[in-house]
Length: 203
Image 1: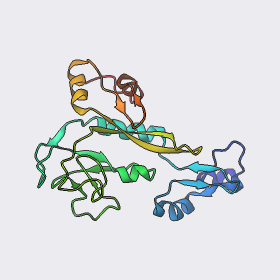
Image 2: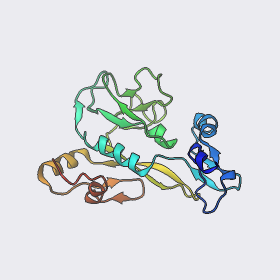
Image 3: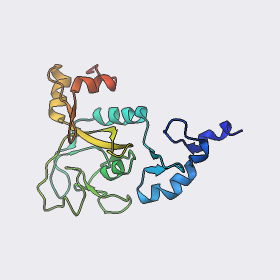
Image 4: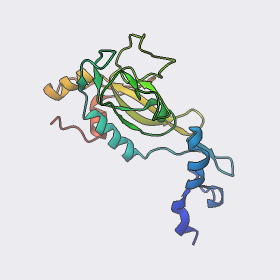
């Protein structure tokens, strides 16, 4: 009977940790998610992360890398080039993948500052109001990619890296010099990334 209810819980990743120490998924969503938390301690004191699976991350990365081009070269108010799709950086910090879409308007997303719990600059992806604003002449870091990595405390977190979009478009056209994904302290080779995402075919 207990085995039949396993799907209702987030299991502790520590080998041999009893099901008695696990957390109900519904409890995690009601107690941790509203606080922007993605880690929890089991009753035995083991630290765990609730993050998207690798297959979910790969699918999201494929989706966003499939659109390296700008959809506009002169957005409203700021007159900047913008991409159609971004991951919300605030959600990534909370262990979530939110695939956001820019339809029109300025570089602030969401444009009204409401409708989503995070607000960021669509052009540079930095936090709106503290790290960027309409008065800041920011730069586009490229196409986002997300990975799971160590959080330095025995668990995992999500991290955003960037791919040079123009270099990536050039690789699609020529097959030469596939650009790497650049993270804060490391990089993933471009062809390695393409293999992991099953995107070796430039067509």
